[in-house]
Image (cartoon, rainbow, N blue to C red):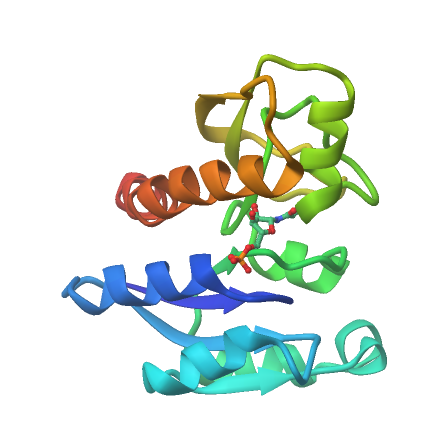
Length: 189
Ligand code: GAR
């Protein structure tokens, strides 16, 4: 049995897929959604699916125990990052070793690192003329985008693709594979 907390900064289409997927699972459940952005659409999605939310600011996240208190209260075992754009602080890395999962919208180690998120990744892939891109689901450690890779899937980059076209193809892969990769990982622990 695992209790999952999702961290997200944006639209939350992945968060929604994950919440829906685990709502049909007797062994794992999404207990809360946490965001650094008060107007992130992910918060609407979570509320519509009856999942409690927490919003925090930079000071709360990096200099207080409030986030940890919320996670402990909900008996959270696993953190899932779904479009979460801030570096995870040490106190979470220490509290959740090998229990923080991230998704990156490219084939790491390429197109990772600081500043590489969302559309910026797709723009860079197209600018470099790559013929393929994909998704990487991995564990989080002290460095951006560097932890153990759990799963990758590829898709083509077509000659006339805009970054939006590529983003949409990548989102389809993410929605298809992120929930089940999380589940497979949880079952392997
Ligand atoms: C996803 O494509 C995810 O891979 C990316 O942000 C998007 C969030 O979409 N994450 C990163 O770029 C992290 N470096 P969503 O809010 O619709 O789930």
